[in-house]
Image (cartoon, rainbow, N blue to C red):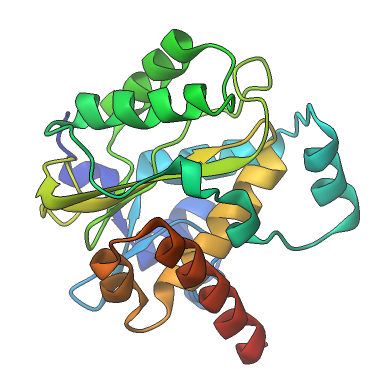
Length: 235
């Protein structure tokens, strides 16, 4: 996996300047989970490439299936727990390298008929990782296509993989990655909503540590159900 250059990591102030918004507005977006970021040593940091992906996604909408259209047009929320099936959870990944993990997650997605073209999907995921790692720090990675594609992905889902020993995934904080949440979507809007909800759940104090301690597939689903309840109680 290619490492992350320091030039690719931006501070909150640099993001504000890049997007031509105020620091206060960016911080508000961070707290609402609207913009992709990671907290490193109590400071918010942003991957420039992931930020560019986010901007592109804001400008492009390509829904392909009924579920995506429903979420886009009629709902301002998406339930993460409903995007996760026990059959799509790998509680102990066999891979010990980034490409091996990507392949293992993709093979699970293909087996569960979530993608139509496994080889093309893996190729695009690896190309995405070569640009910059999707590991956001604190042991969490969110692998995804740079542009959601309806010809490859059949429906919005999340495939979860865990590595007890941890894997070098060129994380923003330089540490090992333990939890991999493979994001599947054929719609830019749905993809953004998934990212936003995940960001909100993971930003709740203590949740990342809880997630990394989970061992059973059912417990992963329960974690996200509780996480969504925590968000709802804060609103």
